[in-house]
Length: 94
Image (cartoon, rainbow, N blue to C red):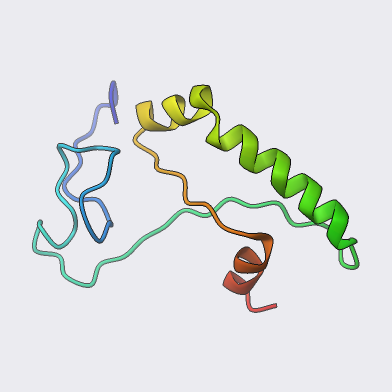
């Protein structure tokens, strides 16, 4: 939120995180049970072969975990969450 013309009242985290250290969690701001998330992902076409999915996942994972990208996420107040293609698929029920 640096440079933005806004103020953070709370972040929807279960505990204090690296990003936006000066913004309280929703529980600390007395907003119990409040949750929010932004989710980004890549959706291959139906029938995509698992080796291709694994190769794309490995490349994206490597880039997002890189020092340069991790630093940029932190500057933006974002904190990437990592998982497997199977875990991501589970978010969508199929």
